[in-house]
Length: 505
View (tube, rainbow, N blue to C red):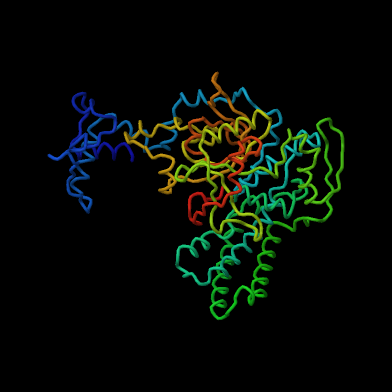
């Protein structure tokens, strides 16, 4: 609001600057008749009647009383003119959250990657973990795997997954919650660790320069929108045909194949034809000693190399294909196996599996892995109490309570239950700073937003932020107890497709 309009508003409300009563009020003064819940004679709480409408006269009174306080007028000038996050950033957090750590893996992987305007963070985080093993195996200084290669096959497989689920739910109402959840995002850019594990097992890996990003890989919204529209149209056709068939899954094969061929055509034209998983490729590179080398292999053979004796030994005894997800979901029982119904990407391969543990168990496993020089794929809600420019994630970074005199007190479980939070982004842990008692203070994070974000691409996460907004860490089985490993053998509790734990990073 321009200053002259603001001054006029003050005059309309008969508000004058004063050092009297108004200056002694709370920072943001909210009118109320009581500071504690009133009690009836029998000790039970009593409340006034609930007003169904918003009274204009009441709003005017609220505004008058609020603007009588000069501190509130100062807040108005500051908060109305810029992003509240900027105004309310706490200097103490920016000073404390430094890029210094007493436990840090020696080979973090470089260069810093950039997913651009796409939702491929899970593929970047996963390949940034895979590449460390290959860099150790082949003595590399820098290396990047092709995220676009996995992206191509994931889109194609998700299209097939969607159509198969449409055929499997023809008895469900079109406007029912399940079918609408399937229709919501048939080829979501996002994904999960088990989904990338499926892709690597079926299609393998290729170096980035052998299948580089196209424009549509880096700017995926148009491609995703177009394919989504086509698949929704296909779903209507399949449901209509299925209603006229006694066995739609067996009788509509040729129709579905035509649909899949159209999706393949669209992907090929927008991303480019990828190498075949069993076709020979030649990878030429310089090692860290600047010595030229050449390897002729296939994508599947390169992926299998991660499990070779040489690679496992070079990677501190870890086979990345054996790693699995720990999650922290306080809504559900700890030390239990969770899964999400109809969430996946490749028919006939594994679905999403989460071993639900306390944050203490998750952190212990992460610290042990970092001490063993192993990077960690993790999933979090990156947008909460964080700043992409400074690369700081800290619940003390932005003091909303100071700015607005409101209390934001949702627990982690309550955030999940109300849709306030979910896994939105995957990144990689490469270091931790411990206090003298071995307790974590802050964590080093490798992001995939390019060198322009954070400290040349690196973020720092406070341990208190980890408690509240980290939901997943992918770990080597050897860094958790036998009790935790045995949970993988149990039957999982199946969460519905729309559950927050079904969110794709």
